[in-house]
Image (cartoon, rainbow over all chains, first blue to last red; front, side, top):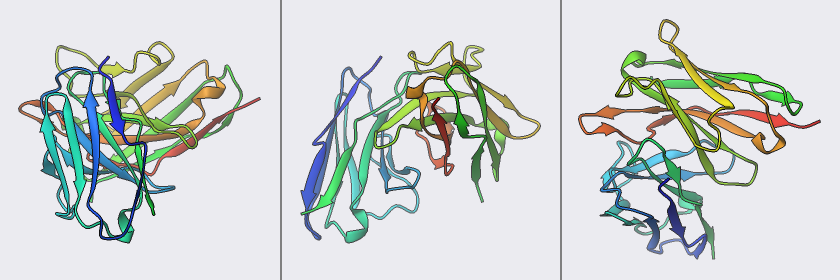
Length: 107
Length: 124
C-alpha cells in the first residue's frame, strides 16, 4: 500500500500567519492527492483535490502544490476559523490512505 | 442539495455484527462511487473502502486490514450504501463516515461530500 507521511503533527501559529503543511507519499502518486480540514465533532471538509485544485466554495487563502511524492498545503494569513486538524489523502491506487493529520493550534 | 446520512451505529458486544446505512439524496446515485471512512476516538482518519461505478467488474474495494470482515454493498433503487461489520473487535470502535466520490475521465477523485457520521462502540 502507498503510505503518506504528513508533517508536522502539530503546528503552533498566530492569527495572520502563513502556514505550510507537508505530505510525502511512499511512491509516485502523480497529482492524486487531496487535503481536508476537520474541526472537533465535525466531518472532514474537502479543501483541495488533484493536489492543487481548490474545491468550490473554499476560500482562496488555501492553496495546494506538488506532484509525484512531495505535496504542500499553504494557508495564507490564518484566521481564527482555520484552527483545526488537516489531513492529506492519496487516491492514486484503489487502496486509499490518509496522512496522520496536522493539528494547527493557537500559539 | 447533496446529502449523505449515516445510520445504524450503536453499542455492540465484541464478536457481533452490525450493518450501517448511508442514505443519499440530491445526486444521480448510480453514477457515483460512495465510500466509508472511520475515525477512532481522538485518532486520525482511516479509509475503509468504497463501492459502485468501479472498473474491471469490481464491486467494492477495501482496506487490506479490514477485508474479509467488512462488506460494502449498495441498493441503487434506494440510493443507499451499506457497510456490514462482522466479527467486531473493540478496536473497531469509531465514528463511521460515508462520503461521495466523484468520477472523472481520469478515474476516481477525492471525497467531496461527507455525511455527519454514525458512532459504533464495541465493548463487553
